[in-house]
Amino acid sequence: MARDFPSLPVCHIPFPTLVEARHRLPAPRQEVWVLEGPDSLAAVDWIRGLGRKARLLPASDRLGLDGQNGPAELWEAGEAAQEIAQCDADGRSVLDLGCGSGRDAVFLSSVGFQVTAVDRLPKLLVEGARLEQDVLGTQSVDWMTQVPKKTFDYVLMAYSYRPDLLKQGLAALRGGGKLLIEGHSRKHHRLFGSPAHPFCLDADMLRAQGEVLRYRELWRVDRHCVVAAMINK
Image (cartoon, rainbow, N blue to C red; front, top):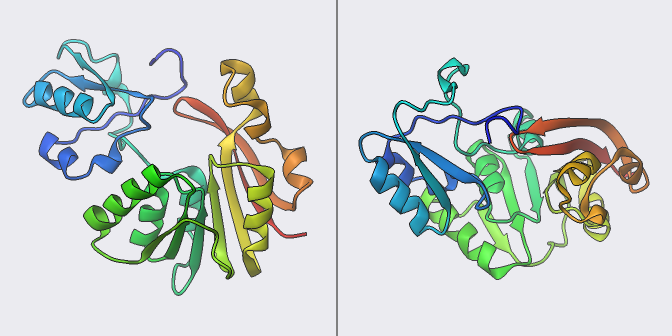
């Protein structure tokens, strides 16, 4: 894994802390490596008990990780969500359209935005509600099952691309608002065969839907992705 991808996240976090913040785990399909030490067996068992993949590594097998520039998080907010977070949050609203389990929504709410998070899958909405209660202890994230009929300062679409959803997101922008979109690139599809080609992003298909202010392609751990900022034409 370390050889296959340009970067490998490294996180030094006590096991009891992880139990209280399991939203920091990476995507379910990713394997978590636990370095041998205090609580390491318990950590592996706990991660596997969540239905996740985990591997125990001997203390001597550090995979060259000591040369990393400091520890990273097991999970970090997406590039598009981080771009929104750099803006002034005072009184600003965000629609997280296709929020999944809600980690980006929780992150944006924690830095001051008024977030409405929307997804179609009940299982993900249940997990989102747990995150809201356990992580925020507030009702600022509204876990809805359909796009609300109001407008927002920002719309976030992270790995939830469909042409009809993009149109809804652009239509939900208020004057001067921006849509930040992040998703798999065509290059990712060529390299790994997933996701299905219609759900990948490129500049031309985004320009066909709205005005693209910024567009970039980059590696993010195990995926090659597109991150773009858009407004209505």
